[in-house]
Length: 151
Image (cartoon, rainbow, N blue to C red; front, side, top):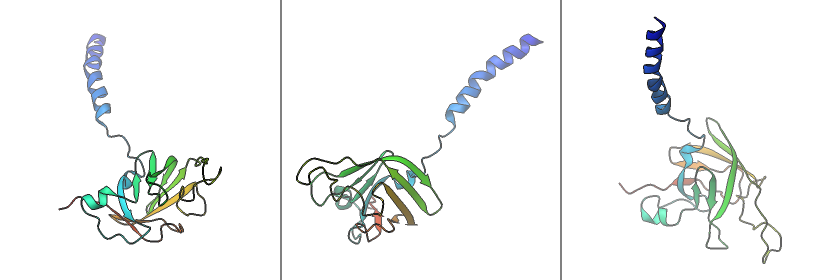
């Protein structure tokens, strides 16, 4: 009898392992934000096609938030430390920005944050399926809209 139970357990073990591997991983609380966004600094007009994807204002990824810099060609990158999700949006705690040596001395570039009260926190509120805002962040007074492909 015990041999039959061992044989059944041996046969079921690969099935249990395969079933566990097929379970979807829990999505990150900010996965709905991933992609490119326009607006924020100015009202978002053209959100479809190459024009929007060619020069987005904000890019969200799993680990980094990138924003345009009016002072340089390169995007400012902020590493994400933690993300807390809620029903209306998410709150990011960002790694402290490194000060750069240059024309500003050892100061942070003025556009390294988002104009929020705390430069290492960013709250994002969802206003619709493709629209968000950064409340109380004076550098982004207008809503942002997701860049989409032309239909």
